[in-house]
Length: 532
Ligand SMILES: Nc1ncnc2c1ncn2[C@@H]1O[C@H](COP(=O)(O)OP(=O)(O)OP(=O)(O)O)[C@@H](O)[C@H]1O
Ligand SMILES: CC(C)(CO)[C@@H](O)C(=O)[O-]
Ligand code: BAL
Image (tube, rainbow, N blue to C red; front, side, top):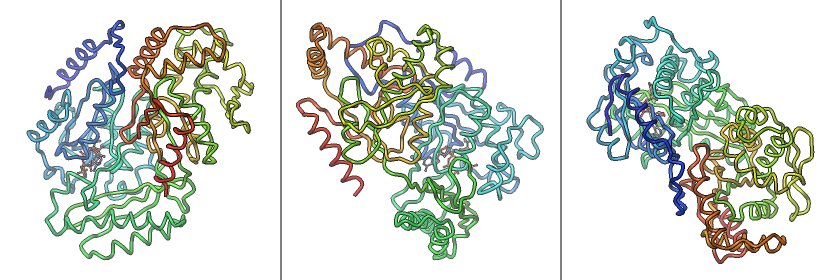
């Protein structure tokens, strides 16, 4: 692990690293490895140090998804107000280094304020260029008492993004307002960076881990657990069907009033992306709290979601995902989101327009402007009906030509980005069974049920041979099919964009020796157990 403290060293390290890890095109092991990481991606975990298990969860996620993981440690003066705890903030670099080493971080970037070009003053006193998020996002919640805080965060995060130029950056849901502001920053300033939100890690008492918990004495530490407990009380009331903001907020207020030493700064219910206050939860709401315990200011939040469940089914080619997903959806009265059909529809459009498959820029243009509709077919055995730009392509997307080109088109990052956006907009209300390579990891990381459907290479080769036989296609040897499948697995799990990966919280079903009906029953049982 490298410790880098200057911009020059960081840039040199990244340039070398990016050169060293160029993928070797002929390096294609026959062994299928779902734990393989994207070969060139860089993941950034921005922190202020005093690392704890919350940070470790971000690091672990970054390690899973990238070839290189960089942790930045910088107590940023710009985000502290004149009366805040900048001087007192815990600085534990030696311990942080040990922890990063233990969890496989590749490099730490720990610059001084001078190196970052910021004087040790608040944002109001800074004379340099600043990044100001939309005022509606920084004036409520923490922004009310921490004036200038989010300009300080946005400015330093922009600098870190420009310095590291990561493919992905990892932030905790605990700082929910920060997360929404950074997502907006990335969208508004067109940073080509994926923002990955990680769930809040908590102590057994429910208290969210925070570097500031060290400030609490034993008694306050115990009382601090009330923050999350009060949010959980409101969540329980929400689950009984209450949607009104004032009722949910008063549940939190009543609960928190039990501890005299907890001084509430705010309790608010906002839309999690725009941070606008909401009266009634239509789809989702972030219930957020900030409170003082003695001189320590703590924050926490919980996202309340009123949506029907989503089942995410991922797995390698030939595992039977589409057959299973369609029938699971029908059994449970959910909509089947056929992502394969969406990628086929874009492929059809590309071919129809005569665009060469290596003209990624023209394909990006087509994908980012297309309009796709899917409607379930009454007949369970028949495929979902698909329209692209108003043309019904249900039949034509099943031709050999589209079949042979779809994986090349689907591997292009612009295509995946465009389609993931559409899928996520459909998923807002839930009630879906979606199937693909990255549904549980990228498209719906908060899906209620995640299944990883797989089968051995030999089993999938055998099934494909049977399919070909049934369709009257020329016979292909099992060895050839096994080689093809292993190669496709390798490509799917090693591509830079949305690689095939089993989500950490997915249940694996290996279908060797199982009938389709048995697989469907297993998933339906699991769904019913999980949601009961
Ligand atoms: N308990 C946690 N679970 C998940 N992520 C967390 C947790 N605590 C902090 N993070 C995330 O770690 C990143 C760095 O946060 P930071 O270094 O400010 O730590 P912190 O513990 O939140 O400190 P503080 O509470 O003092 O602000 C942020 O993206 C933050 O959301
Ligand atoms: C994102 C961040 C590292 C910027 O200084 C900080 O706000 C934090 O630790 O959450
Ligand atoms: N948003 C976490 C860092 C801070 O409170 O300044």
